[in-house]
Length: 247
Image (cartoon, rainbow, N blue to C red; front, side):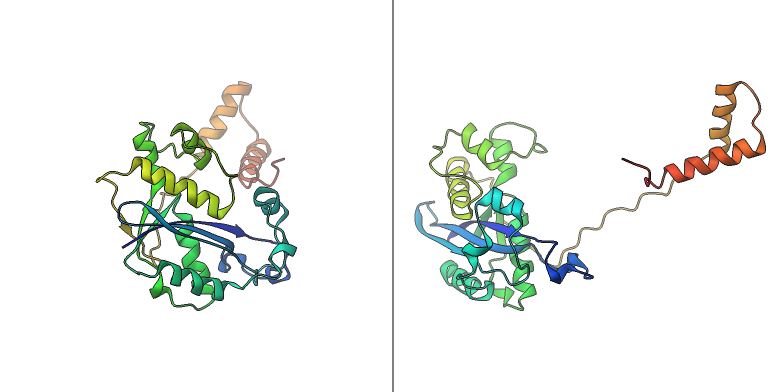
């Protein structure tokens, strides 16, 4: 059994022709880099994985992504596409009963979404994962709802800043070093269900008491309102709720 500490870099380019007239939500954030550190059961680093991915969903790398990661469209032209890189990554993992370790749950989700989009065998992906991020908050005794950024966590834990951030391999390295430092028996893996859909409880629909609204205006002006004034106030309130006049 191994711990596979991994990180992903994504791209999404809404100017791409594929997005025109389409439901963009059906497309995943396209993975453009996979970086991973393999740890043995004693948390010793035994191997690493780093592979860039040639995009096939979006034609260009978003300028914001390039600014953040340094990855350009031209850089990825000669790389392998996701199905090939996915196969290499699964071979690197080698054991399905390995545990994923990640900084934030989105990377596991997008790995499954990309594999599903390309009709790849998702049964090869490890099911168990550990999200390191909330455990760091517990270790540092900050509120669990305050999820720290990776760079902040490495600084607070006095981990040497030897690499830049927003590079999948280097972010995986930092996450692995954090895991080594805070690991304890209470950190246990959970099973990831790619089909799970969180159902948010429906909120009861609230009704506006227009009688009370008009009463407030009567108090403000200290007089009765005409029918036209009441209709105007009611219409203005309804139009304001549409947010179409927000700047």
